[in-house]
Image 1 (cartoon, rainbow, N blue to C red):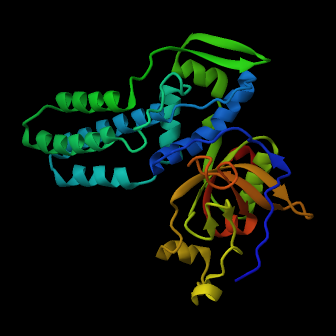
Image 2 (image 1 turned 45 degrees about the horizontal axis):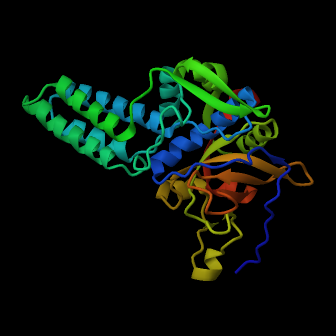
Length: 330
């Protein structure tokens, strides 16, 4: 075994408040994208209390848009196999930045009190019922035993019952300057544009290399969280909150020496992107290069240091596949 020593201190530490506690991967992926925006909203509001944005709101539109696309496709091709395959592939793939951007720019965002994340929605029976109703709907649509309008109405009713009603307007109270302030009678798009707007079109997904790693570090140094896509199955310890290539030596411990490039590991599936992390801290070495990052995975505060991991720069190089970076930095 290699000797292991890593510090949990950072030169720039952006986030000291609570983390999301997602119980499913899709919700965790949504929460990773919400993290930088809720920080921006807290800063705009001067918020002293913790602000969380509703992941259920984003999930509602993600699933309702999926239902619309699948049923439109089924009507167009008039064949069961292709739309069923399209649905299965859509349900298995990672929620991504384009999904998030489309929903936010079209529908805005709401605080969690405006559309509470129901305790069951993370692994919701309603979501499973929604998926199966959509599968049945494809069959009914092709066999002409049910109309598209009735199927769409059914799946929306399931989402409303399971995830909650999307608010047309809401009021929001928060603590700032030692007193409670209230925003009266706003809506999701007004709330996003006024308090959360991060100009999402100014960001893009880049495959990671040394330039992208430096850009990510610069973003954090300038006060912005960075969302990255990584394979967290390797060289990680949830209890200690560690992501580091020196944590376990696979060749020493198991006799497994993977002497191949990162690109080769991606191609053959040894590295498989499976989780989004939001990076909200960074430390630099004597040469000014990033030494380690502070990362949250949105799976609660019970793991690591209050829900955070310390990610070494070497682990970033090896297992972070892409990062959402401000285009201006490139």
